Image 1 (cartoon, rainbow, N blue to C red):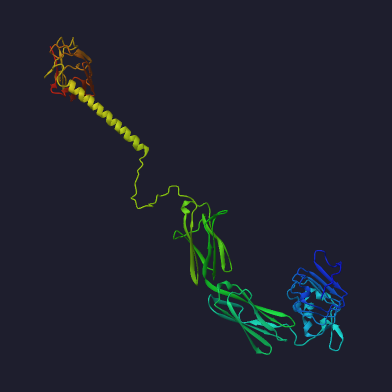
Image 2: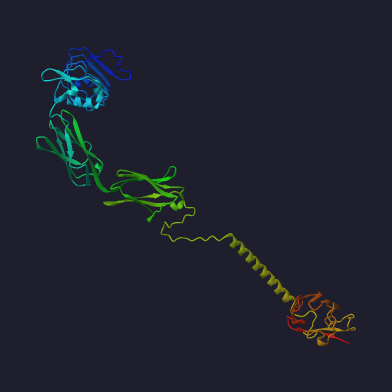
Length: 504
């Protein structure tokens, strides 16, 4: 056939690629080769052209056809299989000479169901006696759609096992029955059994079923001239869980350890952190969804710290087994990392003392040095002045008073444990006394003695003497004295000194 393409008609929209053939008396048969060049064809009109037959696969290369007009031709029969793969919105078949037979029973069913707008057309067929009658009044016995049944609606099998499922097709005319297994990964065989004259049975055997076929739909079809019926079997393959993927942490809105797990029955999921069970909290939680055998989601971290670093293990478990996989998650560096021993050399320990210790040591060293210097100075002074008393006093020493208030010249003051002058001393023995100190040898080496009450004593001259309180007295100079008791004086060098008061 050579298609003659006339001008587009008004009923062919510009957006649809159209082919219009009209008034071509020599066009009797339409074959697949005549249409294979028009793969994008959406609208076809062949009208008043004497068309008598169309081959079953004539439109196999025209999957986009939506409108077909075959009116006013000489068609006597037409198969539904021509339009099996098309999504027709409209099929025009008026003014043809169809024979009233089982071959056009499908048209009657489509007209009843309103398929392809056949219900809006006046269709007729010619009976055996040559009379025309409306298509909807045609009555053909033993001409119906096939019936179909399967041995399993849901087939459950373990991975690696074998299984057999049966499909039965019945009807008149007897239908052809087959399994549609395109895309099935498991090994399969088909075995046909004709049990009765009106039943066509076929067995499908699955060998070494694989988990890749889980969820596959096995479809059985039964076809005859009236139409097609089908039945489906849902295949469920049980297999142990598998961790398909487990990714390292990735920062999205939150840090995410993405995972994909497969398993049937769907496995339960658990997490470990460094070998210990991980508890969900506001910081760490699992968010995933499950679709069939696939569980996909994220282990989410909200502002993790270095405490969250470590190994994360995903454990998936169902009745058939367990699977696990581990990844390392690093979020932040440790602020104070612990030094690791990476060599066989013994570690060298370095102790850093705080600054406070260094300062304290410096102070201690300074004080010790000052004390040493002071002791050396004292030792030198003692050696220089302490060998012999400058006043040459041995035993009791007398002091001359100009004119003391309680006695005449030559009075001497005695300091004893009982107080000035002993128990019989005058009650006025403790006023301020000013006297010249004489060493008794006329050397003139003397000084001024101040006695303030009974507690304070000063020697101004060659010796410096001070009494603090009533019990301790030290002389820094030629003599080293100590008060023993209230008034007793002691020369630290070699002699004991007592001062007595002389009365008239």
